[in-house]
Length: 86
Image (tube, helix red, strand yellow):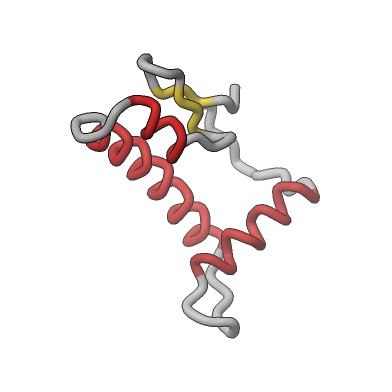
């Protein structure tokens, strides 16, 4: 990952940040800073990967795949966790 000094906010990225902000907010009047929203999203991604790895000890691969597949965290049946982003 390369480090950047700025983050370009496309319309799509802004919509995603707005939706994520609503999830992170304590209530409808809370407006969390972008850094908090980004930290929450990154934490969620890391914890999701850990949860999938732990669930594989208890559940069959097809169940894990059916429950955990997203556009970010794609699972290949009986193989590994892969990112679809790059």
